[in-house]
Image (cartoon, rainbow over the protein chains, first blue to last red):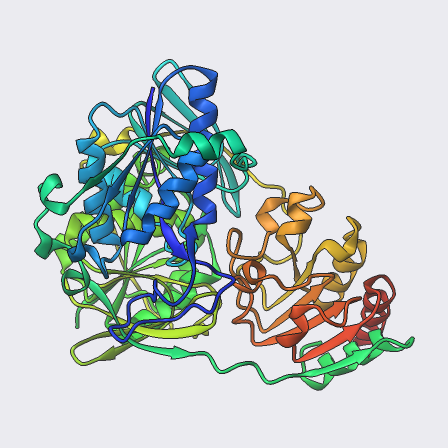
Length: 259
Length: 318
């Protein structure tokens, strides 16, 4: 079983996130890390190969620092890394991202399963897995809260507000997993040491046969025209309950015609 | 005037509020054409007409709902090729966002997710959305192809404008590839009798501070006619179902009133509620970050404050 896990290097949500002058996400001014939601995909890949056999390749695209995301995944236990690194990639939208990832997955050779998280914690669009499936012509089996892989077949539970669904497909397939699926492991000391010796390949767009004019900010099919920091909410009234706190709350709501 | 395709968000013909919101904004941008996929059109018909659908494409073949996402993307791609619409609008649900993603690739079109407003501008569409956990508002524009936009529920007030829609049943060739992921069971979730989280005008959420007892949260929610939400901590502890989780990895809500009870206000929770119009919190810890966001806050025990507030709300109604 060969599994490719697509991961993203994102600005830490605890930091002060913002934009560059070209209105792309600022990836320099804020510490970055492996998108938390991708840890669930790495964990699920490791569980699958540990229960059987196979290799986990972790794939990312992004600037030099994106190697951090690969390193963390290797420390968790992934076998090898691929970093698509090319200046032309900066500012790519979801459409271009899916193009680069699809070509990189193809270059990985025989792949049974492409795993992703449910969204990145910066863009939060949740569309790249579906786009990847579309581009690769593979079954899309997404938002898995439970995943079973056996005999060349994949089955998931997919929950939404109104339904819980079972979705099945034959491998190879593109599967995204939610944060309900498992509890990602922390890298062990042994894992951290072992990661230093694991192979990481760096591929350029030329290696993938992707024309640089198809990616990056200038090629984006949708672009941000304007960004504005939301004015901080004006500090409201905070009272300490001395027996009448509930009534004060109800009165506030009545005053605003909310109750 | 160009058509604007609106993918109807519904459950067995029960049209969700987001559909009315999308039809309302579609009327500003062109001539709204609803695309109804699945069973139950008879039940949906009246609502679509009431919110001004000039046309309805009905695709009720089981092939569209027996397989995940891909067949609906093919259907919309056919309709886009046929009608050259000014835009395609879908709801910001998991399913519809994924349809939009595939449609963008198929039609060579730009995609913008989670719009809170859309206006015509400079020969295109100006789309407003909120990013980075509500800390920024951005305006974006699609420069290539047909603008494909997912619309965040509860952002655009729905307005009625009666029409008599022309109806057309559509069937399209669905490729083998699009049938590859099969939906083999679909179980409706139990209905709580409360409004749905994304559509509710008021949401009352509980967190770690409930200690696992959501009784006071539900009582206060019912006094206000509100939906019940939960923080990730409460869901991870198994105190409330995941489908009620408000935050980055759960549901993103934007109600008129959001009440956070026993929720500290971590960034990942704020990402799902920061755009609420009025925010109220009850927390024992006066230092909890949630108090930085509130219009009104009470420092104290939610187990005494919420029942007292519920009683007072009932009295005021009486």
